[in-house]
Image (cartoon, rainbow, N blue to C red; front, side, top):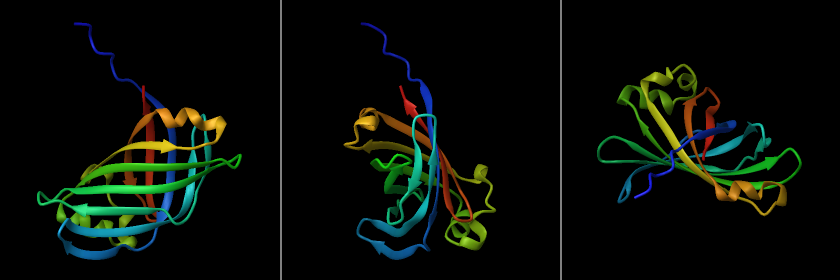
Length: 158
């Protein structure tokens, strides 16, 4: 049987955006739910750059094991006006005291990223001819919390 092709990563872009205060939905049949809206930001990479439009959403669902599943939908507008839908799923694992800091905007930017695990997988969709290549890739990211919201470093899986 032939070997599998190795995975490689190519830097795609970095993105930073603000989030609104978390809305707490409590313990639902699907787990503890929280939601924050994106308040805008920027993304920048070798092949694309632009702004994160306000109005995206970050949904967080707490698992029985204490981990959190993250589900984000954002609208990216490139510097030449193309629209890209971005969707990423993630996992956050952190001690309870760190989670309390994450939901507090006055403390969120001071958290050491080494104190939590925050990773994402993403896919994108667009009808813009110049960016249709992004429809065919998956990307992975590491991220950190900032005082304003989140900062990610995405790489495409090649």
